[in-house]
Image (cartoon, rainbow, N blue to C red):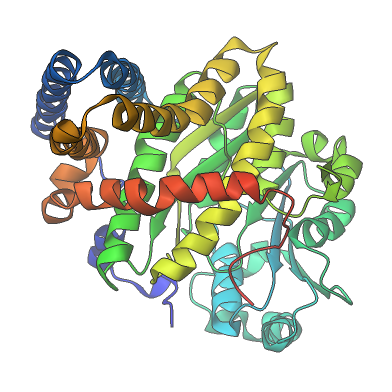
Length: 447
């Protein structure tokens, strides 16, 4: 069972997280490694164009340009360091068929925040297994009597804990909506029920709101069970890239495309002005259940900036089997397609958003199309050469996009191409499958 973050030593926390500051020596190493890998990509792209066909070279050129631009922006990323503004905070934790220990760990991590929390909503979405709901109720009933037994809680700043259970399973959105309708905060912080939030996370998450144009912020997520097996190690590296590179680059332009479910904050007016649409959104004639984080982010993008704050941290568990990973990725990909179409419309008024979404949506498609065209155009005798070039692309680009990970966990970094091959064989085809099954709806991978 997962350990809460406060039960971990400083050394164990450092083993889980990848958020330490780089020294000048480390920065030099990372930048040098990145330059080397990009040079290798240019060489592979040039030789592929010369020996095979221009289709591969065209895709390679776009991919390199995108990777280069994204990495350069991530190098420029900076956190917001001013003290947070004085804001009333409501925390919303939806839960469905979750383990009691996980939900209690999440609640306690919020209770231990060093920034005052006004209220915490824990909403069970009609779970078949009500043990987590009952455990949350028991915690609420005994909280004031036993708060001294929970290390790290400030009795003077104890928030109100509201625990509720929906009579039937209606989906994560409706669990959140129940809380949003009753919350009184200036800012709504959304937290997944299987996450442990670091004690300074809310304080850090609020710092960007010193900029009046910021509509939403999101934190940094690390994998708690990284050492379980090879897959969880690869997923941890993928998460590090998704936050430290992708969201960091998006944040530099003020346009993070996904404020992550595990830890994000939204201005009250952003959510309340879209609450009816959030509960009734339809796509292809079906009521939408998936992609709550992307949908809320789109509301925020429409009204202002969306920012990544790397110092606001939490930990969560990654899938430990390919089956669970594929279910999770199928769900995420469906919301990716639907909400990307919404973001494209917003992009007509916000050019940065349009560019990011176009690249995120169509670069993977260009990869598949260029591969099929190369197979069709290239003779059978050249098939093996073409395969070697594609594997070279996957290998070198995997190293290039994970250079931040190299100094922190070098042995895992050496395995970066394994995730690239996993994407090539399983995750890329899964995106096409998700596209073909967009009408199918469900909440998640559990229960």
